[in-house]
Image (cartoon, rainbow, N blue to C red; front, side):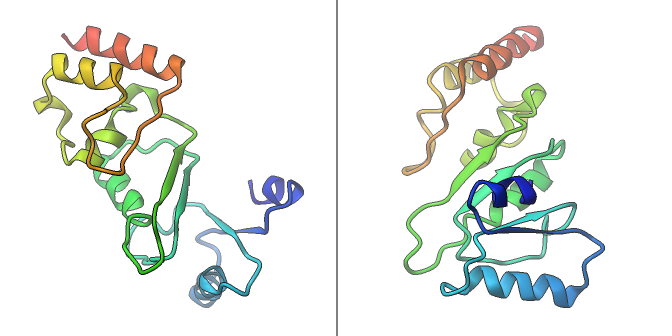
Length: 156
């Protein structure tokens, strides 16, 4: 992904568990430095928890996230408040369509899907979670919306 983004004019790098703590810290420092051209850090199985980059305003999910707890930890990387940060954009490319409604449920604080009324969930999906907290917005592509609604029918 880093290579592809660089080809398209973005200044990106990647970090894995094989990179040292010093290398990780240096990349974070560079990302936070407004004068450094680094725009994006792709990570592989790191930065899921215990990392704080308050200026971060874009999160791309490029792998399935089975655990709502891990998802919330990853989501939390971008929702830190800091002066001058007006928004965060979260793009879930995988969608994890089996449980793709977990994202907005986590945002709204309703992560226990078994306790969520399927009729209410159907309405929420149909209206793209219109009752999320102010400033939050979910845009479901038609295919994802259809898949979610079909799964809800199976649970009913």
